[in-house]
Image (cartoon, rainbow, N blue to C red; front, side, top):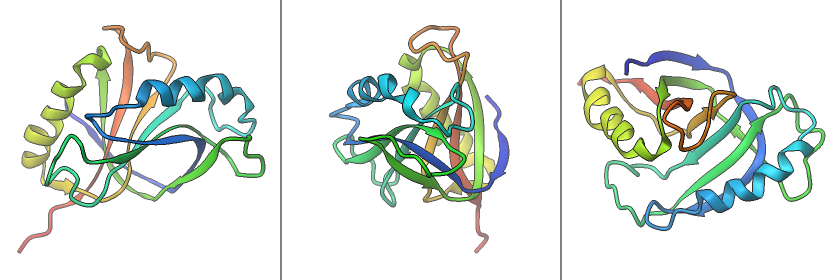
Length: 163
């Protein structure tokens, strides 16, 4: 899995969020609350591309603890925030550089995929992890636990600084 490196402008999202940890994962509940209400987001850039976004604290992966909390979003990118459906919030992804991995397979293999990204690809890449949100774009080919499911994994990166 070789990523492309992309620099994106700031993106505005509307959706729902929950605080969770890997040990106390509330992803199912978050998406169960978002999916029936996403049709009320009338200003979506593309309603077929959902964002699963994680906001980790500084050094989350350096001092990894599966009980450490982070914020996860289920959202859509929007053109503006003129209309925010009841029970939803806005979030802005800051502009920046990302390593974008195209992943095909079940989300049940997530541990292996992210282990490869953080333990193999990143240390050998010439980049380091940046302190911005991580996200996945779940497009029309995303099929949850299906082995033929496809998604994009966006990891915030910056060039390694030479000493």
